Length: 381
Image (cartoon, rainbow, N blue to C red; front, side):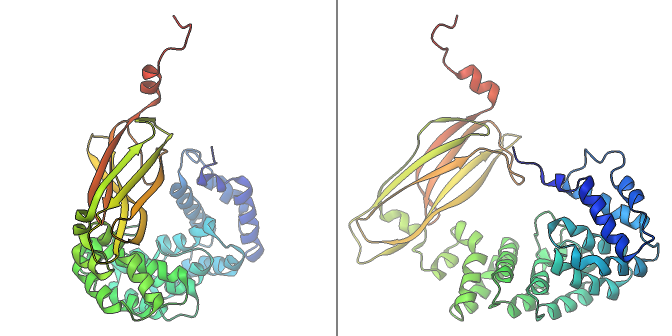
């Protein structure tokens, strides 16, 4: 089993970082910092908890004056690059809310080395107009990491981040930033713009559909953003979104003469996987090719017995009347950071442009259930 991500914050990492800090500020009490960081409860802390513990330990061992402490971090940040150093912007979030200008300058620097997408959000909530004006300026920055922060930091539904309820209610402050970045040369930035649009679409689908219709066809890079930004709308078979990308809509399912989806094994164990095969054939009638979006819809059983559906893209293609399409899909039942699996009957459906054309199911068992259901071996009493 791979080592948990939180394990990157071990004693060698903390001591090496303490030595870097001491090289810029010789008075830094490195061993005291390490002792505070790894005090009681350290082993039980998960990733974000460990990161915050490092932040507070810095707050207790760097100069008590925020500007002086920040100067120490700024002096070493170029030697601290990558995901583990997210505690640099976290330090700004925790100690710098009252020093807006200095903190904005620091986040602009720190985001280049790691990312300040989480740390910027309390500033947005505290001073929305002022902070969004700075982020709009960042959207024109020479550095792609700073431009990405302009979009990623104000996503209404950024995973693992503090929510931005005002932008869920009214996304209009975000739109000038997305307009500026709609043909950004950096894929890193374009992914963020698309994800921001997808976030907005969950609360304001009409806003995103209007943007998509206006942007579509302006530039190939923009078209890529529009397609990715409308993925939830297309996945939900929104008629306007489907039409924008040339799909026939759910009516395409009426062109299917036959379809099937089957699991090679009707049962699976938690942590295992299921191999699926699917096939469909279009009716012979029709004057030309139709565009089809094939998806697998999985009705995941949740802890309380409720069902949560998730869709997986199987294919996006044009097909002529009478054509046959077939394929395979492996479905894993391993727990993820974003999804936990539970025993129960999981219903699966093959979708064509959002409409179900064939269904099956897989009975997911935990280890004890699987053992009790296994047939006795030859010779067992």
